[in-house]
Amino acid sequence: MTAQQQTLWLLAGTAGVLVFATLVGQGLRWRFAARGQGDNPVIANLNARIYAWWVMVGLMGAAFVFGKTGVIVLYGLASFFALREFITLTPTRRGDHVALLVSFFIVLPGQYLLVASEQYGMFAIFIPVYAFLILPILQALSSDTNHFLERSAKVQWGLMIAVYCISHVPALLLLHISGYEGRNVLLIAFLIIVVQMSDVLQYVWGKLFGRRKIAPELSPSKTVEGFVGGVLTASALGGALWWITPFSVWEAAGMAVIICIMGFLGGLVMSAIKRDRGVKDWGHMIEGHGGMLDRLDSVCFAAPIFFHVTRYFYTA
Amino acid sequence: MIERPAAALITGFARLVTGVQARWIGCGPSSEQRIYYANHSSHGDFVLIWTVLPTALRACTRPVAARDYWDAGELRRFLIHRVFRGVLVDRGADPKAKDPLVPLIEALDQSDSLIIFPEGTRNTEEEMLPFKSGIYHLARQRPGVDLVPVWIENVGRVMPKGQVLPVPLLCSVNFGAPIRLQEREDKQAFLDRARLAIIELQRRA
Image (cartoon, rainbow over all chains, first blue to last red; front, side, top):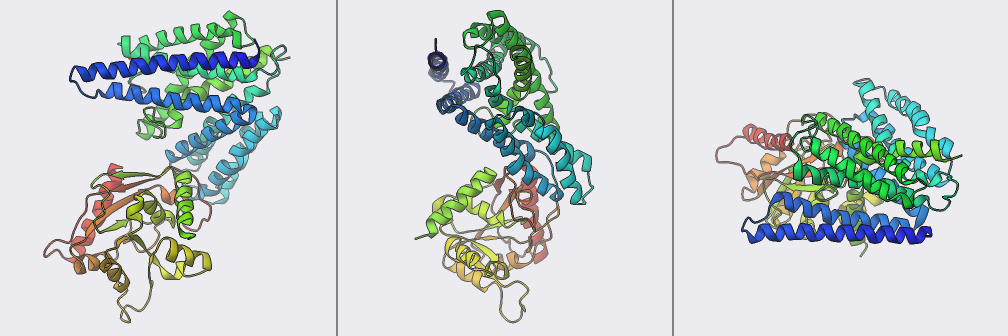
């Protein structure tokens, strides 16, 4: 199969899953309404989530059509919205203004331009070295020393999570894997499908069988049953998608396990930050899901590891 | 002709940068005449209130702004007069010369709604400044108009005083329950009550 045929099959399969989910969601709504129980909030939220999935899959599909530019623009925007949510929840002071302007309008576009111009070396160090050193300089020059370390750490964290980590998704296009030329966009599809299906399947397993809470003080909805069921089924799905990757079946399943576990733990870390700030969601831009970061928290942690494991073992 | 696209451009930009959300907590949007009074930390303040109002209400809701700032320069003049239809007041003018509230009362008598900032100046502190007494005199002279407390969240961080470029952060505009001057309520009691209504919104937001 050519890369194009594989992409089409993938999109058809995804659309099939979404049609199925939509039928189940509407069926549940109809059944509850028929029993006179009116609008059940869990089911209303489920349907809002499914609807948002249609939009997100549509956007991903559209980005794939435009190729490299489309993917870079899509994830650049995602980074922008994610960084905006992160910094909104982070108390900053007037003295941080210049550092924040630089983060939003120089560092963020700069990082994605480095992906676009395929400068891997600079891409890998731009934020951890240059932004890391220059932003606290700008903050120090404002001569506001109140909570200085805290403030500079928070801006750094925001950039690492929302820009550096997320930019590793389009950076998958930079990997030169022999025998896999021209197909890297499918590597992105593999990562995103596994990460997001892991979230969805954990939610489904948790809602159906969840009893023992895994980390009640971080995330009351995460259960042992949801975690185990979700990771196993999503990893099996990853194995079943081996034909779009440069991996063998077992390698693909192994990669999927890494992606799922990093995604799950990333979700926990991001929850810890939300709890610390006293909020339930990062934002409200995606109906039923919360904010951009609520949807991408697991991607943030899975993408860089997936990128580097693949780069280490599969590129010359 | 150019006013409408200019307004669309400004509200569009405000939404893009701040993703601003209206939260109608104590009242809903209504075409009844109102005085919206809000905390003030940035020039973006009334733009955000103006952005979240439904278009029909926006057309008859006028921000009260300082003449010395807005009448300086061609662009500002165009924006405040033609786009925002602002009501300009003289700051620091000799109070005995002319009652500074006259243009506000005139606007109210044309059944326009107003947006005012009773702190009087852009506030750089966490806590709200004490209110100037203008809001009390408005409430006394036009007792039939609802005063709606508004808490604007975060906009002081988007564009702090003295900065020109905005940092994109999420903002919200929270509308509380309307208040009116009560019988025999004295000036200070009313000003305190009005200020507390915003602090209450801030606590809930």
